[in-house]
Image (cartoon, rainbow over all chains, first blue to last red; front, top):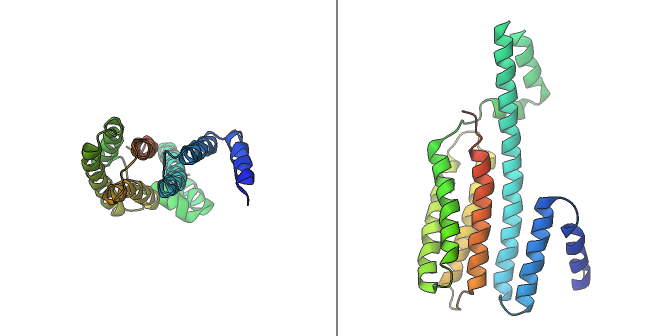
Length: 85
Length: 133
């Protein structure tokens, strides 16, 4: 994959409509530009990119936990209704 | 009726429903810790131009994220919470490691690292606040 292809994919992701992925794409694009301008060392850019992956992992884990919380509310609601019969 | 609903719920997807039903409820200490991490990261971000202070700040924040990870580790049926706390701790430890390197830490890097930690702590805080009471 060439740098041009990566930049094109970043642009596509930035316009995908999903705010989480769009923000991640924007962040990666900005950090890469800062590295190109000499404001960040390649190792620093790599660490920031690893952070992006960690952030996506956190979002995924928290989405699952939020679904479980909703399910917990539903089950307890159903049990309360059932107890009334 | 009650038995039918319980049976139906557990037949849908055993493990997920089991985890959801018996999930750990709201915990003051957990919420306080993640809120402190978020606020600290936000305040420390502003101190990034001061290299000496920032190194101390990064170490203090990494101590709290380590504490949060160890706290999450032993909460029953909390795989997602533990995984998120591990990722958050790795982010904080990455900044501490960078300050231990020989080369100077750019202010931009310091700013972005604290911003990443602050944002992720906010994501976790949002969900922790909604644990069943």
